[in-house]
Length: 331
Image (cartoon, rainbow, N blue to C red; front, side):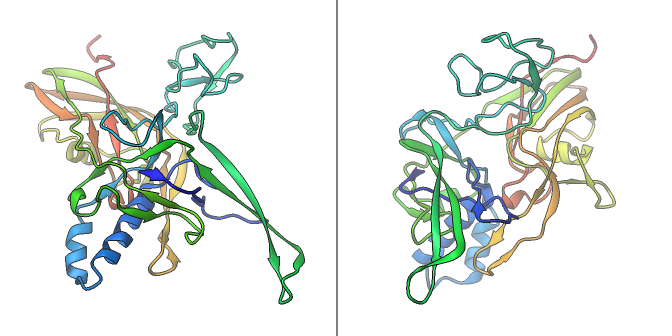
């Protein structure tokens, strides 16, 4: 997507005169903007037609591309964040030259660039050079169009510069997203949030081969994850059923989550048509990681990117990546 204006992507609850913005577009906002554009293009369609289409659609967060330009199959989904099982330097900025945006290994002792101390990553996303968060200050006017005392407001906006926004999407995407289609995203859409779809490119992530025996895998959440136990209580890791279903593991596979690197957050949003907030669930933040031990009797292949790990996956939660093997669990 090619942003034409700054975007205010609210962070939820807030007080005071300042309204902060996210540095990315939540998946639920992408899906909602596509839905609104579909209704504008099909004003006489039935609700049943829309429901059957939107039920297949899931969108990841739209992140600012780390490659300049706004179109072409070379665009990659790179969030610009170190996962929670990594370390980052306390002194260097994440987008400084030579500083890896993916962070350093958990057992690293010092920064490779400045030799400074390290700290565990919190999963915060950073912007590439050329993109920035801008602040605009406004006043409230009285009936004489004069500024009211103490009625000063500040709103942040995300400006991507010449860079694109890139999102992953699953389902009947081509029926909802068209090249050149104009969307409105975020708050104050009469003066902000206008963007256009620059390209819709098919993407087939590679599969991962798992050999017979015990293996140790790494799962990283690309968006927040909402997980519950058998009683419906929030937990900070996916269940065996979640992993088996999402990564298409066989029923005979042994699955154990050995370690979790997580931080708590909440998953919610705003329903524009109803003009009310969506229900709020406890979730783990994007870029939380899980080390999973898997035991299989025969060779299998599993997807490296999924969009349905946990619940609330229709609202952008549950996108995750499965990395290559860390080590043999027999070692």
